[in-house]
Length: 434
Image: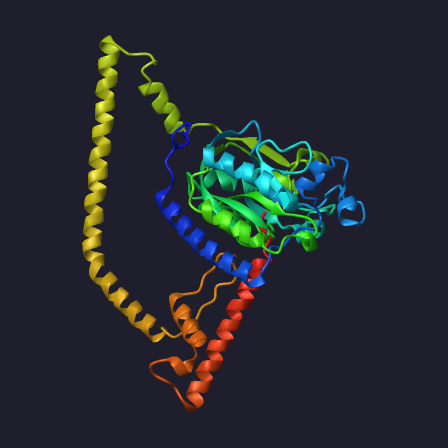
């Protein structure tokens, strides 16, 4: 049964299609990176939930035979929304079953993030819109006496940019499946607005005002961590990554529910975002968005059958005025459409000529390779895939062979590109998704 939306708000179809394509590429490349490493990447700082629940008085020192590190003071600076008891959530039965399985089958090897974390262990479910300063740079950038990151100028710039980008009303995220990454299991979602446009506005306005930004990587997905690998990697089963890949495949494209994010904050954030950890480093800015857009509020007041009615002369005048306004809007829209059609008739030949030129240029560059390694989900171009497959099979198996210096140069170039792709997979494996 599909979880209800309250209130109903459609997704941005164009951005949703782009996100689904990103998720498909990301899922494929993450699987390759994990298979190449043959294991997941554990965070030894934390004690797995299963070990803590078996011994509530245990500390990380007991589990790891190391120093007492029970208080996690690692921080990043982030724009985030906490998914706690006050958040409007409509979880599907599939989400509840997935949580049950994570807590039951994998508690000995990691932390489960949930809306209501257990008294011992676990993490607080949350959505990070974007990191402004990553964990590695936090101390040097934020813990300075004259840091600009906590100033009203900086916080106002970020919040105003989000409002301009569409976050003037609560954002609905429909979580549509999961992706396994090297550090754990992510729940991925499709929001009710183009969230990447809002992020780009934040980046652009910070640059315009010459304000700093230390993103660890360019976040262009919408995710929440469900489970994070924790504990001593030497105590992990050799097939843990295989078991989790099977689980991820099972919930790959499953509707997990919808969350309405209305409460946002800017400030320090820990990995688990537990309230007990965050008391000493509270957010620098908190705000809450309206549940409905101005249009939704208007429609509810005017169209609700329980609302008031206008009768008599006043009602006739109001109806006449509304008809006049609608008529003017219709005429203006039709006029704009006619003007647009005329412009398209003029621009079509030029556009076709431009497409022809671009096509010819693409054919000249058909043998070029591109490996996009600036973002974790980046994939090879179709051309590079074909060439790498040819290299893997061996040039001697090809229908046509290239001999001499030209053949040697081509083989060396393909080998170089293959090595670059492997390095990109390694970088992705060591990317921390917060």
